[in-house]
Amino acid sequence: MEYAKTLKVAARGDREIVMTRVFAAQRKLVWDACTKPALVKRWLLGPDGWSMPVCEIDLRVGGSYRYVWRRDRDGTEMGMGGVYREIMAPERLVATERFDQSWYPGEAVSTLVLAEQDGKTTLTQSVRYESPEARDSVLKSPMESGVAASYDRLAEVLASTSTK
Image (cartoon, rainbow, N blue to C red; front, top):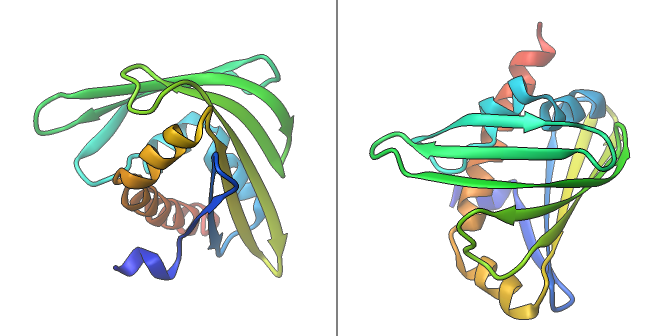
C-alpha cells in the first residue's frame, strides 16, 4: 500500500500506538493545521467520502475539543471529543479522547509532538489506551488506513498553505 511508505505505525508497550510521518513544512504551519478548525476540517477526515460538519477547538489547558464526522453517502455520523491536558505551542499537545459510540473501551490519551529539522516536520502521535485489549482492538481496525488518508490530505493542505 502506498501509505506504508510515509506513515509508520507501531505498538509501544502493551497499551500504546505510535504513528509517525514527516511533512515538508515548518513546525508552526503543521501546528496550525492541527489546532485551527478551518484547517483541521480540510484534512482530518479518514477515508474518502467523509466530511467534518463539527470542529470545535478551545485550545487551552482544560479546554475541550469536539469533532463530528459525517459519511456523505448515507449521513452516518461519528463523534468524539476530549479535554486538553498540556499545550506547548508549537511542539506538544496532550489531550484525552473519547468517541460517542465507543469502538474501543474507555478513554485514551493522545500526545502530539512536532519536531522540525531542515524545514521538515516530524509529526509523532502517541495514543495510550486504558487497556491492552482496547489498544489491540484499535490496531485490528482500519485505523491505519484512515490515518494515512488523513495525513495525505494534511500534506496537501500544508503544501497549499505554505505557498500562500
